[in-house]
Image (cartoon, rainbow, N blue to C red):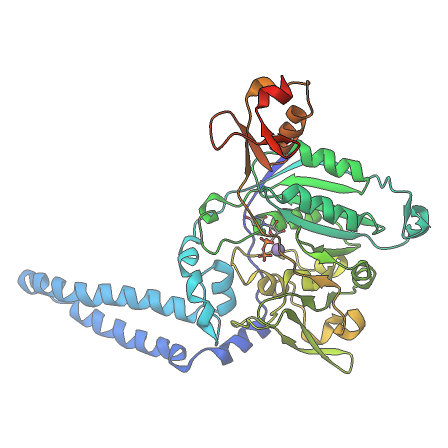
Length: 423
Ligand code: UDP
Ligand code: MN
């Protein structure tokens, strides 16, 4: 097991971004420099008095403008920082249609403090033990670029079922390395065993969300883990292959993988079941991406879902500062800005973005199951001990002797005392 600590990286800002944002910024914000100069001029006059009495009075008089000046300066700095820089720092803003943005402000204020991010590699395997995929022997796929499929995941009772279902999709995909980044402190051995069983090359790591974001609403879901995967890619100096962010609960059409594998820079495609339109994706004219269809714009230059794009690692390697910010709602936009891609370079996929090859399905989340059963019945006289202990390991249910109502065990349509069945 290895571990690493690292500092947060900020997304790069291109001049083009700034120009664009300068145009978008409301007029009153563009003239603060002038006001500030006027203000500091009058402060200097009030503070240069000669006698002690005058000085005392003057001090009071000079204190007020001084405090005002400082406050004004802070406001000035805030308003004149480029919107990209503010977003990267987590200060918010950058939108013409700011209706949904106000809710991010509490989180934003916290984002100044240094981040304490950790990554541990739990286990990994570079061996592809699958023999056949899509009716062909594995060896026939040897020349294809590798897809690095990054899956952020977190402990809840649906975690193992989601990963199992996703694994069964990925089993059909040749030349894929699955980066499973778990949002928790400790490695879950059950996940190691699970991943090993499939024979798909994988890296299992844990990278918990920094504590200060945990109670934020909204929280930056899956960001610490995706950042950990980005760091893993960087550390391995990978300049060949394709990066794709595939959440654990989405639904992937197998054709998606052949579409993204040919990515030169950045490819994009529609994602079904996103927000009000139940779709988010590029608008394509004459084979080129010209705009986006998505019901939540909020100043995003790239109003796309995490599952709606793939990036060539060769292209990404040119941008060592690539990263994803802890900024709920803006992760995709700022990640894509950090690799400086231009709209006319985007490669539309899925038959010019007419097909849906990935769906933003969501699994209903419920509290852990509770099974009340005396521990004396958890031995090998029945299957229940092993079964329930497995469920505990999977984070699905807990066994209790005292909480909740006694578990019902029935026969012929009638609940029976545990002693009757299990003694
Ligand atoms: N996720 C995570 N930590 C969290 C919440 C979510 O790592 O605290 C992962 C989750 O497993 C998924 C991705 O981040 O792969 C996006 O989360 P979710 O599917 O809950 O978000 P939504 O689909 O609502 O955007
Ligand atoms: Mn999801």
